Length: 116
Image (cartoon, rainbow, N blue to C red; front, side):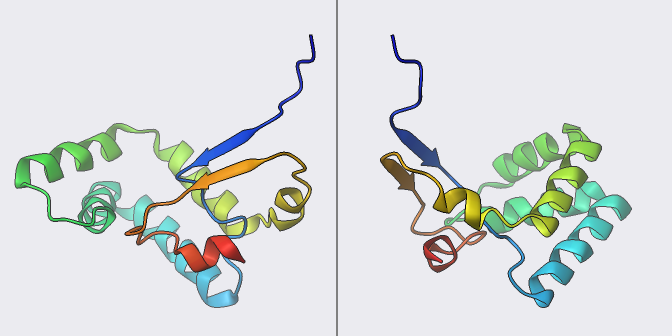
């Protein structure tokens, strides 16, 4: 039996390069500093912007709390990787059928950024 991957589905996939220019890199670096200074406020602010439609106060607090119980180290390392990595060449090497599912109201990664 062949165990190689023959198809790929990317759900909520990030862009292959999160910081294509110095302004984006600075934005991510500022976010890292803000998370380190006050992760709870950052989680709350992120959740407020993450949904297309307004959330009830209870749901907003629920999602924000989930962000505060997550590993701070893991969050910071993820942001550092987004800041420093350029995966364009790796993505270009994909030689299998790939379906990319992207939310039309995504405010974190625009559709245009994913098409680059």
